[in-house]
Length: 246
Ligand SMILES: [Fe+2]
Ligand SMILES: [Fe+2]
Image (cartoon, rainbow, N blue to C red; front, side, top):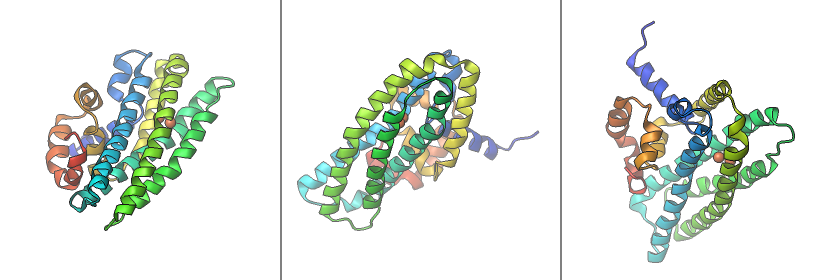
């Protein structure tokens, strides 16, 4: 069967989106012990950086008592992408990752992690709504910053606890076959939660740097990471550039 270049690109993109949870490239090359936590750490880094960037951007605006209208559209896209990736990531954990281990481990208790998700999501929703206005006031920026700070405090606690549980309790009990199946399901789930690609993919890639970015994009076709994202899609995402590591 002949597969078009467009289909291949779109498949590659969706495989990468699936790596919200587990990077496909490192999953099986490194054996069965560390890939789950490695993938989790990478996407957690993607989620952590924008909270810091958002807080420091607003710090600067608040110190001058001026709304940065020049970069507000980019800020809206950046924080909107953060909310989308946050939602997709946690939804995948709630619907797929945690239930997988609940079936496998008797008496496993994810209630604390799930409760933390429930606490985080109303905050993320409020941030998304408050940033999505065309002419924000300095009071809006103050409110967004306070929500970002509250989110960050909860997120760091959740992130650190979750990474420890995954690395110590969950990852060691999965066989390679189970890891493949889990990756597949998370990958398909990621596809349905990641629109528009021309914002989400640059958001994912350019919030990582160095070896983290290399690892995250390792399986991407050259044409996607060196041509489609940075050149063809640039006009779509370049407003976010002041906030990215592009
Ligand atoms: Fe997570
Ligand atoms: Fe989580």
